[in-house]
Length: 166
Ligand SMILES: Nc1nc2c(c(=O)[nH]1)N[C@H]1C(S)=C(S)[C@@H](COP(=O)(O)O)O[C@H]1N2
Ligand SMILES: [Mo]
Image 1 (cartoon, rainbow, N blue to C red):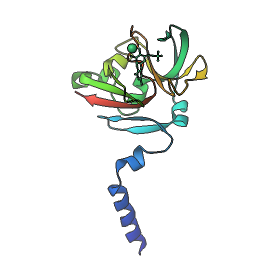
Image 2: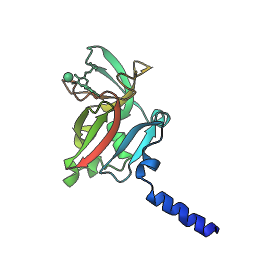
Image 3: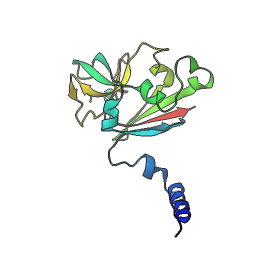
Image 4: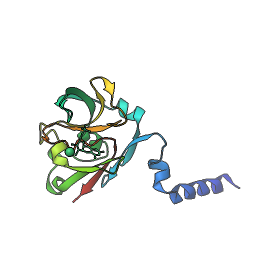
């Protein structure tokens, strides 16, 4: 086969392959960020660890106050192309993110709730509590949402963030 023919075949293979082969099924995928966004992506644990982290003191459902470290949901969505701050207006105000977990549990945040231009709350995906990695029961990633008085949206074992334009 000619080199050109091989290239065409390779291109057909890429086009014909389910997206998942290239974007979602790395065996080491920790988190999938997608839905109605311009730049869906996946992160391995090593990639997540390298993202800019924020820390916050908060009381967990177990009534213990801890220092939680993690990556702001706003930062994770900004990297997928979600517009925040002055650009979060008009139809964009009707966007929400579905936080999905390994056990099928889901919780929804409005995008505006996550944006520091709208709110002083800290909403992050925590990978460390009091300096130690979040265990596999709670984590590896868990939502921490200051300002929620109940803990139903502190989703454990988070695997996906899916943006929905309502
Ligand atoms: N994945 C997942 N996360 C979850 C839940 C769940 O059922 N599955 N329950 C929520 C509810 S209703 C509460 S009250 C808290 C309990 O947090 P805890 O496990 O730290 O006590 O987790 C929240 N996160
Ligand atoms: Mo709960």
